[in-house]
Amino acid sequence: MKPLRIGHVDLDTSHPGSWIPIIRELGHEVAGVIDHGDIHPEGYAQSFAQEREIPKVFSSLDEMAGEVDLAIIHSCNWDKHNERARPFVEAGKGVLIDKPMVGSLADMITLLEWEKKGHKVTGGSSLYYCLEVQEFLGQPVEERGEPRFVYAGCGVDEFNYGIHAYALAHVLMGAGAQAARYMGTAGTQIQVEGTWDGGRRAVIAVGKADAYLPFYATVVTERGVHHLQVNNRNLYRAYLSAVLPYFAGEIEAPYPLARLLEVERLAVAAHVSREHQGIVVPVDDIPWNHRSYDGRAFEAEYRLARQK
Image 1: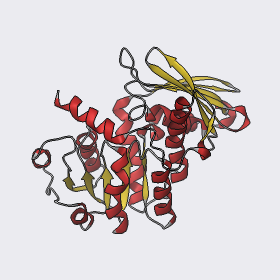
Image 2 (image 1 turned 180 degrees about the horizontal axis):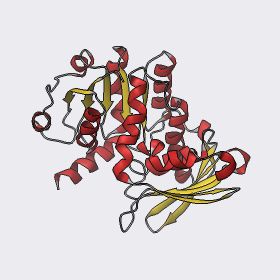
Image 3 (image 1 turned 120 degrees about the vertical axis):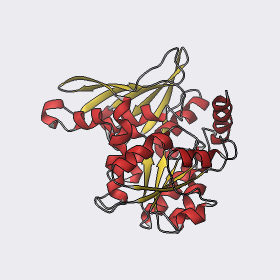
């Protein structure tokens, strides 16, 4: 594979530190980092880079865009993802956007416009590429059957982490999600119904739980029942191994961006449904600039949690 020069934008989460060793093992160069101080104090980027032998802390996105092939956007505030990605897109560089990619239809349209113009943009949940899903979908359809119903879930929160559960349900069901409906709350977990063509359905459970919940899914096909529980240790390598060859020009995009963004569309439609007493909300009818999930509020909560 062609080695890529990769820059990491914002060090908000644990992902940059976890991904960098894998990126190097896969034969790529970590060219540098930049952090806007949304979560960490001044000087954190310098310490982060020194500890990991990263050669440069960039002073601006434009400077980084001139020296990398690919930028990975790790900002925990999904409403900032497009503005942080734009300098790289305008410089003709690849952009990998960590989950959730964005939180509004307006931002989704921007990403799709960039892709339409030939820019390399992808991202989202690593659950879309996890080994357990690959193994299940890799079985002959005549043996495993077509998914008719999926129950998927995880813990922690409704969108930042919950998007993984939406992604797990969506990759198993396939493209073509039609609508979402808020079903109610069981304890502290929110339950959402997603619908596909032919009456196929998924129920997704997200939100805080009393104890740690792994990523899980039960898949019902016309030929059997299959239970998947994801091993977190394999997630990042599977994800990066799938998408980095795309940025290196070795393969086509593993999935069209429009398909990946159906995951965020489902989650946004679910939130709109929740705001309107559980009405069915088609994914094509979510309000254009409605920000169901407030990235700035989540950033503030995340900053306080990291400071404890």
